[in-house]
Amino acid sequence: MPRNLMQLKILLPFKVFAQKQGVSRIVAKTTQGFIGFLPHRLDCAVALTPGILTYEDKTDGEVFIAVDEGILVKTGQDILVSVRGAVGGSNLTTLHEAVRQDFLTEDEQERNIRFALAKLESGFIKRFVELQHG
Image (cartoon, rainbow, N blue to C red):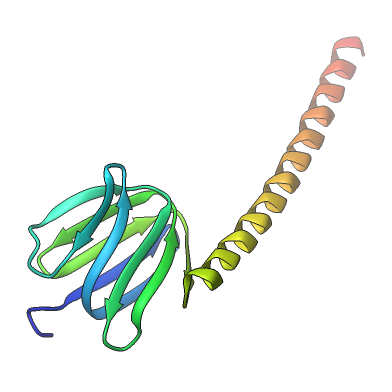
């Protein structure tokens, strides 16, 4: 790989979300604001906040990825991003809709989990009361 290009790897808790070679630039949202990465930038590690990560390569052009909180580490030409969640899109409008759908699905799953936990708790309390009075 030419020295003026980077390798990007985006990790989720249980899988590799994306792995790209030939990346010319990356922009990510950090706790201190947006930060850009070019191939000759000094090595560093930054905390990411939920937002849009943008990278550019010759094959795909400019690519947008919505990421959750996490960390980005640059060492040499390698950039490793580790986040809790990520959603990709070809443009910002498509990405916005994908993120909205992802959050709606997540909200529904959370409601289902809360409902199941409430049923478990009420069943536990009911049995506990029965043991106390039985």
